[in-house]
Structure formats: structure tokens, C-alpha cells
Image 1 (tube, rainbow, N blue to C red):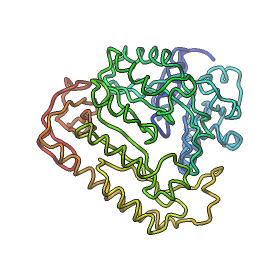
Image 2: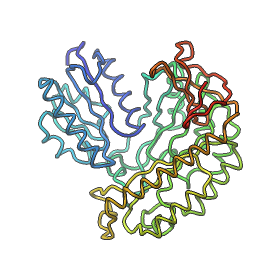
Image 3: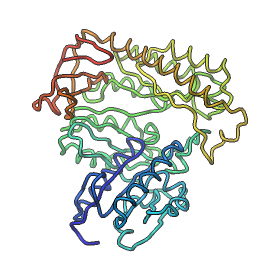
Length: 423
């Protein structure tokens, strides 16, 4: 393809996808493509898809139709989880020119040159891994250190879309991290499908990785994204407690507070282990931010089992919840369970848990009032105000000041207003 053409990207889904999109975009720029906004006219559009919910699939189709209507001569490329799971279905969508599976997502340019239409391998054949990181946001970078998952939870298609757990060596990962350190970003968010499983393919451990990352010059903060409770060892928690770079913030999936449902989901822990992890964090790290994922309306979630989850969460010392109504997915074992929870019940239960999350968040913010923390301010101007986050993920708002962008500033958290501090 000739240089000086334009390319636009859109990313659905998780932080992992954002890191991959950014890496792919750098490949295009290196090849001479101009990077333009997705709403503008471009020669090539790349859509990095998610397939966690059916809604994500629908959004992808709608986006392709929109591109075809405004720019019918452009090439449209679909990558990501949806592309791996349903390539035959996607290539039939009018306006799609190329579908690229998990094994070839970093070779899009080559396949455009060859005018291929669909390139994918069986996910069982995908064994390679390349660390990826996002750029563009001066403040923060998402750094992919692991991909794939060996857990096969009963509700999840991610292992089918991303393959088995794999990673680069610590040595290679650190080399890429040093490239991130040469950018302007102050904070790096470590991402992966099952990040705590890092090292399985290289006979290393996630704990060994964070010890090495902690030594890198040029990065002020490391934040660990979602990590399974059975893989979040006390060793890791103790390390974060004394680290100068790893911030006091954990996001730990629970999914259900009922042990029967955890077994049906094929989760690798029970409520006792989860309780012990939360207790150890709170005992070891003062005012640590703890986020929790919960699935509502999983098959066989009776009223009694939901109430058990609600009470379990109510009694935990946590900071916020991410609540997900259960979504049926093809090729999962959960979809074969006949004890289906009605959508209205799922919605009602989600509403109750989101109200509980608000209470937990308000309590966490109130507990931090009067404390002194360090804020990293972001660059967006929202009606004359800017936002930043403390190391323990408290939102701080201040009058917009260009000089504060991407700066670490010590603040006293005094004025609290609706789950944000004013500075």
C-alpha cells in the first residue's frame, strides 16, 4: 500500500484492547499512514472488537454500516475477540474487507497488501505473545503483560477468543516497559486477561515481574488491573504496601458471594479465601482502594443466594462495585443451565447492588477526608475543571490549569462533594 494514506481506529472493550490498538496504530504510522479521528474520512478503518456481551457485537455491526454510508471506498478491518470467535459471520457483513484473528492482529498491514479477506487460526494454535502498550494519553499507559486464560469459567468466552495463558519473559517485558518510560506518561496500568497468571509460560511469576518493574526509572506509578483473588497472594499485597511505585489499589473479581454459585461458575476460590484477601489488604495497607466485580442473575441465583451475595458484599470493607447482569453467551456451559433468571429480576438486583456500591464509595471517600495524598492530574478540560486521581484512586477536581496537566501534586483532601474532592 502507498504511504501517506490515512487510518482511523476504534476500540471496544477492555484496557487490553486499548493497549493492542495503540501498538497496531504505531505500526501504521511507521508505514507512513496519517492517524486521523474515527469520525473523519480515512482510507482504512480498524475496529478492535470485544465480545463479552451481545451488545458489543451489535455495536460493531452498526459502526461498519456507518462507515459504509459515509466512506464506501474505505477499507474496513475487524480485529479482536469478536473477529476470532465469529470470522465467517463478520466477513459477510456488508462493508467489511478484512477480518483478522488473534494470531495475526499485529500483521494487518501485510494482509491488506495481499488483499486477504479473512485470516485466522484455531485459537488452540495461537501460542505467541508480544507485550503491547498504549500511547496518546500523556498521563497514563495501559501495558499488556499477559494474554489468554486457562480457567474456562462457565460464563466466559474469553479463552475461546484469546487462547491459553501466555506471556513474554520478564526480561522482554522489562525492555518494553523501558520504552514506555521514555514517553511522557507518569502512570502505567498493568493489564492482561488473567494478569496474576503471568509467568506460566516462562516458568516465572507475577510477583517476580512487579519486583523488577518497581526498579524502572521514569515511571512514577504502577497500577495493577483486575487480578483473581486466588492469584493475589499475601506476598504481592505486602510488596505493594511497601513499594514506592505500585499504588494502593486492587480490583478483585468476586462474581458471587454464594459458594454454590462460585462452584457452578468454576471459579477457583470460595468466599472464605476472598474474605481473607480483603482482610489482609485492609490490615496491611491503610485506605487501600478495593474494587469488586459481581455478576447478577447467573442461572440458579435464587432470591436466597442473591441475598447471601448482597449481605456478603455489605459486610466487606471494599470501595466500589462493578455490577454486570449475567449475559448468555454461545459456547459456554452456563447457557445450558435451564434455571434462567428473568431479565427484570436481573435488572432489579443490579439496581440494588449499584445502590450498595454508591454507599461503599461514599464511605470510602468520607474515610479519606482530611488526608494528604498525591494526585496525578489529567489534561481534559471539562467546563473549566480538570480531574485527577490519587494513588488510591480518589477523584480530585480542580479549576483547569495547563501547568497541572500530567503533574503529581500533593493535596489535602478537605472539600468533599458527591464522591469527588475539590482542590
